[in-house]
Length: 109
Image (cartoon, rainbow, N blue to C red):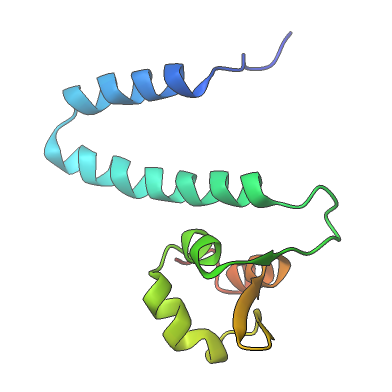
């Protein structure tokens, strides 16, 4: 017995587009929320270092995408987050730190 077949991004988007056009408005809100969660997981997977122990410092833009928040919010609240890393005047964010923080938050954001 084989596992699920791999599909490309174009095929996946085509299926989602067709489904979205047939859904009622209430179902669309649920779909949008679930797609946001999927987007965050896909982005996290795309920027995950090859070695699980290897950390990567993210830019504000990358970290904001992972956290599903604005860059402005991240700059403003940077000192309150345990995953903030300052390098001189630059602000970076530990990828592994964000992952730990999100697990502690119950995946919120």
